[in-house]
Length: 277
Image 1: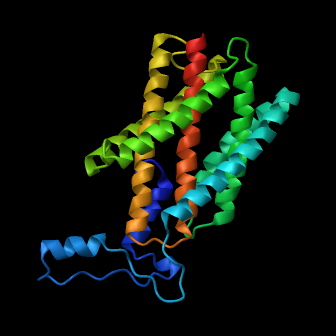
Image 2: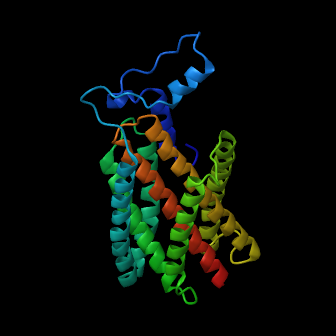
Image 3: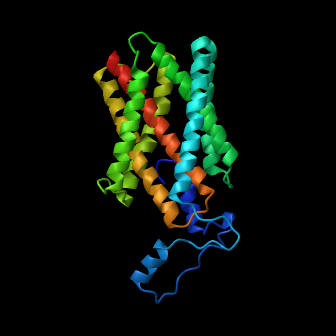
């Protein structure tokens, strides 16, 4: 799946029959005489799990796991906020350390051969500390007061809006849509790395564009990219349910949603702070 490497593995495992979770061997090629309609039905039907194996994932599973991870992010976000508020230097360490740790853990989760729930939970904890420290910094800068609650409200509103748009078919995730989003996300990821280096060497909180119209335009693009990535997440959840992914995959799907939501929140923070300047 385009916006999160973890979802790429989900799709790969689905094609292999979720063999690592007792889903049986990879499906064999269908007989040549099968019609196009039969092939489509075969693709759309959930994969059967052997008796005694993990049951298939449901929407309730994903929702509950997402809420659990979100609670961890909020709880440890409060801890990160408190650390940054009482000790600015330590808060900066939590900020930078959390950013690096989430990057490393995210890659491990995405490419580890077996799905690890403790790693996903650990990611949520570290991400919470990072988000809390970053939020406290934005809140403490003179002139930026109020950007945190504004960013929270904007994130929640965007999430609800994107979910409704996807649910009612206003946004359709097609193969072309995925390709475009994949290229845009990879391009922005490269830009983000370069921009981080520019910000460090120029001692600027925003890097390229600063608080000019160019900078605001960059932030608007990033917000839009993160928002439309939510549609990919929703489609990935439906894909997992349709293909009969084992219940344990609900942790992976929830992790993907949380990653995108936090990304969207951070981009809103940057956008509103730029606009305040």
